[in-house]
Image (cartoon, rainbow, N blue to C red; front, side, top):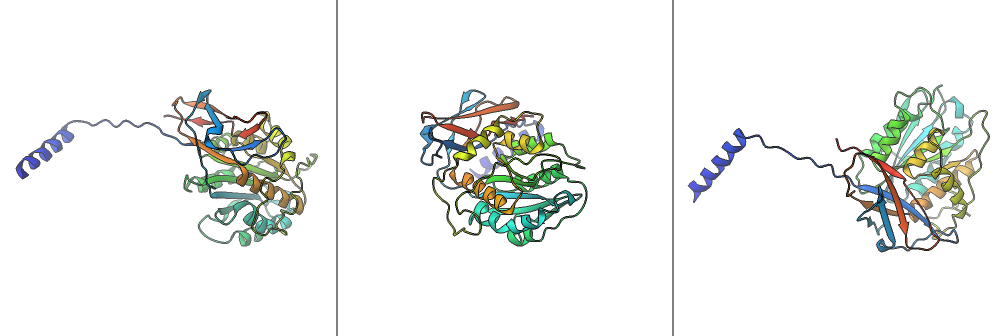
Length: 327
């Protein structure tokens, strides 16, 4: 018996040494779709099950799975710190507690990247304290390399486990100057890595301030006590989501990134408005559904995504699509 096994091993070794073995690589990609659902009465819906959803990829129904447990979040906070925002940097620096308590939460994690003329990782995911990192920022420098900073944050997020929700949060002006990377590369990279981009935008010189922040009744960091208001009324958010979803291709960078990834764009110019906006994003993350699926089509190019629910009159908000490269 031992001689027979030895002969078999020798034969297999000879075969693999003289005959080329072809390897077939089939790209398998998990697509995650964070989704918000509002009722006909514009109240957020929290108790839907997997069977209530229907996900279409390029018009084809998918075998999607709803994650029934809370998904920990990985947040890359990207903050503009050049001279253009010097009057805002002091109170942004005081927002670390709000980001930590209202957005990241106990089971989440965060990194902090700042940008001006330089892009700096102030705090990586696996080290440091978020509040101390944000508190240490100061204004300086001329250009605002927003896209390069986003690419650096995207690289940090892509290294986090795929089981976590990945969020890229910009705090600054919707503009870029001096970046080597392109906005298209940042957008495509975020779609590829299942990263949702949310943006908290400061006013730019010569442009009118758009007020779309709103009070969330005691959810600022001053009143935070470790919980979130279940079923909070986010009806005032619907016009913001509608405007974000319908943004034109030629719009500003923040609008393009949020529209492409299913994120939210909010404006602020005061510390309380900033904290209210952070609280809103935290509620969105905890009130949304996370659907995922492996596409049953391997067609290269852009894939549209549509999520439907069997709730009459419901409004559904999710990422509009993603790019699939099978090369």
